[in-house]
Image: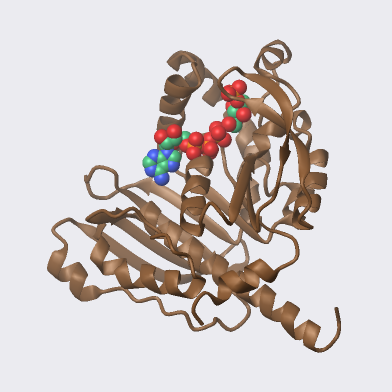
Length: 321
Ligand SMILES: Nc1ncnc2c1ncn2[C@@H]1O[C@H](COP(=O)(O)OP(=O)(O)OP(=O)(O)O)[C@@H](O)[C@H]1O
Ligand SMILES: O=C(CO)[C@H](O)[C@H](O)COP(=O)(O)O
């Protein structure tokens, strides 16, 4: 079974598309970068739907439009591009530069075997039809606003009071155009303040839509003895079955910091199975809930895609293709 996923992926005609949606400052790009690291840069390329805004920063100041409004995003072009990428074709896409607030010249984007598209409207209307895996990142308001203020002031050159004003103006648009997209997600990642006071720790709940095909048998080992013997920090793990927007889901929550040793064999199992040579998570003594969520997403993605590959292979054997 070693590296079976990688072999099948390499033989796959076209590209698999992962979509990551969520509000501004909700951690979409950060999450996307971590997924690229764990699946490997040679296999994954990514872009942001921010590139499909139709108004630059100066124009938005004059019109009063907000980027969350689908009308000021060229979603039709984005859908055409996703369709081309799914077939494995390159596209020439617009480029929005967050440093200058203006558009740079369009660029050629070559898809790798896996393409991640992240943005405010990734699961909106037609766009979600082109996605093989749909993810929604959903931090609580307090966390999201804290992250956004810090990022916009430090990296995008905004004044703190302007970011706060914009956050207030955006909320109704968020409710109307962004929030509902989680209904369509295969995986929702909810991030909340930790019950414990450890630095860098959040309470992270991963809500996974129950897959409707038999799983391939990849084990999910979690070393309880490592947890008990090595954990000097408070932490909590919980699991429950539930319904989420009428879909059967599994809810898995990690809060606090978990000794890396406890999830070591789980990480190795995924690496062996996928043939990915990189360690999935950074080598550190402890891992936090968002890192565990990344592991769960990697495992879920591999299971889903293996099912797609199996279906294609079965159909080929029956000469349907
Ligand atoms: N898991 C995380 N743990 C700690 N901080 C995080 C995490 N995810 C994101 N952040 C912080 O939040 C900030 C915003 O995240 P990011 O840029 O990924 O959001 P985004 O959803 O892509 O935003 P936008 O759509 O506005 O570009 C980052 O600069 C980072 O400091
Ligand atoms: O909601 C957003 C997604 O990141 C941004 O505000 C939007 O892309 C515009 O970017 P900028 O504020 O850098 O002009």
